[in-house]
Length: 446
Ligand code: PLP
Image (cartoon, rainbow, N blue to C red):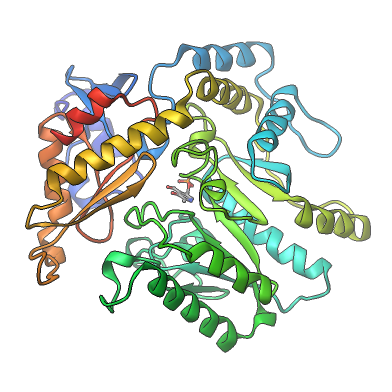
């Protein structure tokens, strides 16, 4: 914690509007900013010199870990040679071109092009516009609604905040309710009917989705968006059969599938993409975080050949596709991503996420699984959640005002480990850098 009486503390209190902040508490000094000043591997250090094991990889994004010189050098080299040129129309720079090839080489089958943005939120804005454009070109202007899920997180711009199915991101913003629709989260632990097994619950979720499609009219629905495993909503893996049932339904009603792989992309689930892990064949894929391990801001939409062919038809008929921003395909960010993807391969991080992830989750289950206040230990790859309950046997949940998840995260921090209290429910989330060792996993569990 830094001293608020010093200059930096005063500037922070008086001038920096932190994202996702409690503005009043911050202004009054009731919450204090921990200034992080260094990092190496899975550890970060604050300005007072205290070191923490970062078991959430920043905001589940620093996949290769901190302090990777290779990425720093790639950024510096690109900045010195050519910091910027745009990619509008018939211009481009080398790094994003090379990167687009590297991404398609790693992407699920059927993907053909990458559009680059700067954040997961703006990439999902691009997805919405592409889904609209696609249907307009195909002569179906009524097909515009996008279905997302409760507890889904897709960003916090106007449209993507609206997609996001978490209360916190809607409160007092009056985000547009149309053309966004929400359907049930595949949240097995909190299923209303506890007699259902995973597959029955998956079917129940898909039945609700079909009811929504039929009630609205399939000819009004453009796309369904979902994270392969729900992340910010509570680290919720899909129950058995969920994705194959969802995909059959979307096919039946000719609805595009957008896989939001901002968290799951680039190794987190022990496969390069979550879509491959769960056998999802999306029409559009959102990427960000793990693409550069957040060494530089970069996102993308991976476009399938099916959608690309329609975009080509559209631009042949209508001219230039009027979508793009100044820093799309930024060369410095792309250079960071190239070095990051090379490191993921060189360090074999995808396999490590699979192996060390399984180790971490089973050690957590062993240590905590029988505790009376632990309802469930769940996850996949290097994503894990511990959900706390007041009474496990009688499925009584804690009153939200007790903020049990936050209390546990604070207690963990005291012991030198950073986990994250997820915003809805008493859930501690863990998603360490993919370079985590078994020894470091043991420290988290301990
Ligand atoms: N999609 C998912 C699945 C996310 O987890 C996030 C951020 O956590 C986003 C989109 C938004 O990304 P950004 O914060 O870069 O706008």
